[in-house]
Image 1 (cartoon, one colour):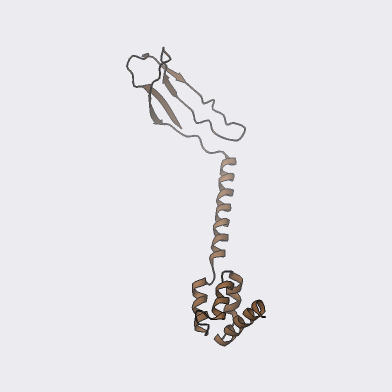
Image 2 (cartoon, helix red, strand yellow):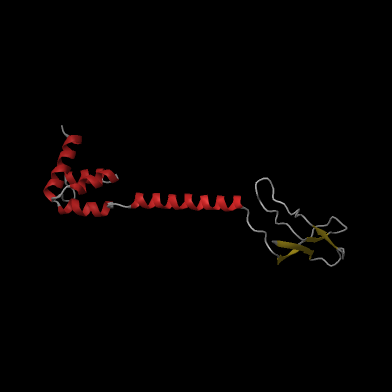
Length: 153
């Protein structure tokens, strides 16, 4: 627990510090510790503005309640789950990798098949389907059929 001593910069303010104890030794209804303990403040007899020095003194902290520990555990599990989900979405063949295969199968840049690949392979499921074909010939034929299906006259 930390305690705070407030001391003004100006020497003309009162000499007697006032001790304010805000720690009642209990937790609130949400299970939070009241960490305000040993707050000392010099109070000015005049309402003039002043700046204060805050001196932090380390004191013994109360142990965390079981509710706080349970919440921290759940937050950690949610965070781990979110990270695993994001990582699973990033796994797979990239657009750059699949476009290398497009050119290797015979779809030259500027061709109808190459254009079709640029349109299709922004979606992961199309990239995955293209990569399921075992030969370059099968991949090129698939691109031609997709192009004909969408742009046939």
